[in-house]
Length: 276
Length: 276
Image 1 (cartoon, each protein chain N blue to C red):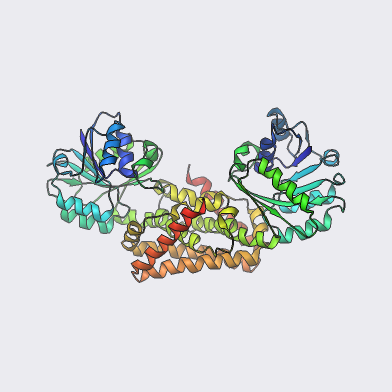
Image 2 (cartoon, each protein chain N blue to C red):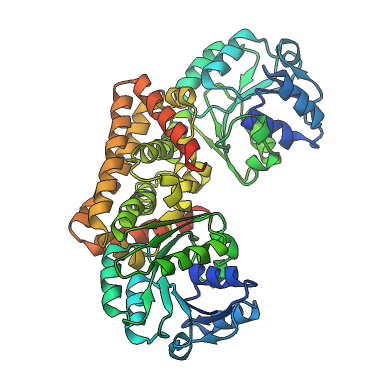
């Protein structure tokens, strides 16, 4: 199978690295020639292209790993092979799919997907097949998808090392992701920004602060686009969080040790269950 | 130097492991005989004691790694060697030091300390010298401390691998720790508990959710004690956080993309600066 990965950043780069040795003919498209040269040197792609026109017209599967608006631009300006499958890695789906399905050619099937994986650093140098190992993947099913195309993507991503592959509607995806991905990013930003900087904070942190703020290092363009296009679900998730946070604050104000302990026991049992 | 570590959990266990090979005579005290046997087998302690009375009366340095209230019980019920130093690893200091200094013998010096390190799992099996590597340590100075005793503890913990050792007052410690440690724990609990459980959450998470909720697995007894005894500072830190979180929520409601981006750029630059 001929597979082309468009955009060799952390996600696209991890795709070509995870594909290595699986027996496909893999090509890469990227604006950066040095990245293409490195991926070729790593034995992850047969050839790299700055202009993807020729290669996507021959590819059985095109995986576009660009920012949401750039995925739409790419679909608009490229002609894919008839009968081929095109997929993406965009973090919101309802709004995005409406746009993408308007643009994609009738004889090409768009199967949208979301690898729940990544790094806080950008670029091919942080890509690795390890990024996908034991991670979750969500396949988005829409009205125009064929059952066998959904199955094909499920099997394909499972072969790359994803631990769990789930199929959902764009709306269900955006609802759960507002909680599991977008809300944590909002929290990390607020935590980092609430530092009064009275002390030299870096000298007084442990792993808890490191863990909670790692994702506060984020791309402003990408995330504002993702958040604003998933506003309703995200606001709901933020509200749920703030209610629980206020409940802890009230318990603290009232020296209500039992409510505090109940909350800690609940979070502990839920956290233990989470990765089972 | 004869050193006794009391309580061989993650922190105490990491102390005896980090002390291995540094040329001291190290002993352990723990209620669990199997833990003592394991530490002895690991070559980390010369001997283990369930009752610490005999050994702490001969020790030049006693490191008590128990829950705050149990540290106070231990000090109350034990007689330390005259002229020796006793230290701890308790996470709050103002309230704790008032109690501890009432109890400690006049001819023994209590130098309070806080290793900003740990694991989310409990027990000796999760202890490792690695826990302290590149971590931060805070030495708490109070009115009865001698300059040379503070210096001794600073040098001692530096020899165990801590990257940064800072000296502060109990109040300053409690203020910064309410932000860098206690607030992240409150956030993690609220995030975990705000799950509506409409979906099988574990199948839809990435590393961001994993990182932000890892510490939601917490000991209810210990943390309610720590929080309630540092209530004023913690409430202030929670308020600062909530203001920044509300600022993001407002920006989202108003489609205020510039405020969102400003917040993301600020959190990014602060996070990048943090570990330098």
